[in-house]
Length: 105
View (cartoon, rainbow, N blue to C red):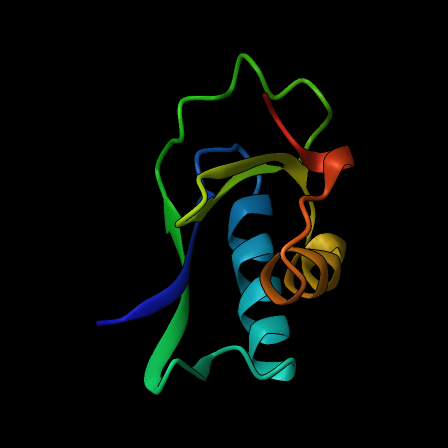
């Protein structure tokens, strides 16, 4: 499968925030036409999936959100909430800009 982007959302929290973030991202990706796109003559997909742990719990001290990593860049975001999905899709996936307020070092 040719992927344009692959997003992994941590689902290892006590509440359902990881699942909610993943769901919001999937909806927004579809809304903005990124579910499947043509790049360089090749059909590429954007995939979102949950995972058990991204091993950044001790670094994610920004608040009660989920951790998220975007590949192929390997950009790591923390404290991501469902309301951040439109910004992540628009700014990061479509325009290639990192969202500094969510960025984890």
